[in-house]
Amino acid sequence: MIKWLQLKHILRNPRFLLFTIVIPGAWYVLMLNMIPSHTDINYVIFLIACLWGIGGNSVVTFGKRINSGRQYYALKDKTSFYSLGNYLVDQVFLQVLLNLLIIAFNLVIGFVSSRLTFDYKLIICVLLLSLAGLYTSVIGFTLGILLQAETLDALDFPLMLIMMMLVSPFNSFMSTNNDFLKLVINIQKFFPFHYIYNALNDLLTKQSLVNDLGLLCLTFVVTLIPWLIIIWWKDKKGELNAF
Image (cartoon, rainbow, N blue to C red; front, side, top):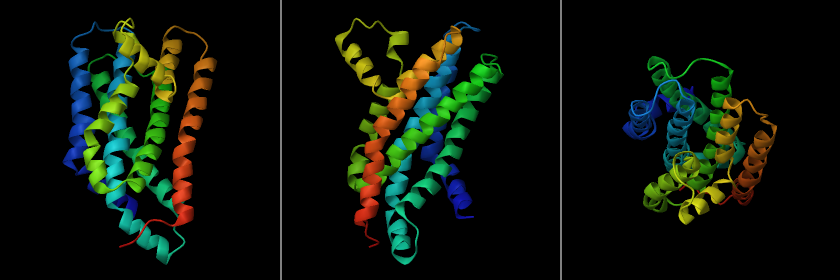
């Protein structure tokens, strides 16, 4: 019951609706009107719109929500067997639902505009996006637990900017002769988002997914381990205070 009340509260949050659904969706509509119909780029911009929304929701908005609920968790931790791991699982479950809502909103836009068709490629895209949502939710949760509210407020825009830089496939739209873009793309290769686009390209060109899915899983696990260690260490040390 508590989870559904939380979900209802989140869906009434104008910040969530504006920055994670409306703005990415509006950008998606804008791009659909700028590119030819029935081209493979339709899948790419669908992924970008979803990942922008998911990244903003899971890292920025979710992190601030977890931070504001730290006292609730800390009090429950001291009065029950409710661990930080339990809190993580419960909150990430809500994030999965919210991220699916973001994906569904963009799917509706794609279907109504006749730019997307329901096929195996789209199903795989949704699964990969859900995986990205899980990944970013763990990061957002950790930031919410680790940082003070003032610090999170100050990092609001920088975090959103970093997420947009990491999830945007610059090599698909821009010349990679620029040294800065080369650096950004090389950094992206350390994170799973880069391989989501590679996997999509494999689907569109009918190549094997094995290599890129393997790299996706590897970067997913390796870069997520430090965040999970921080959560485990915080739980072990019991450093969160109820008051």
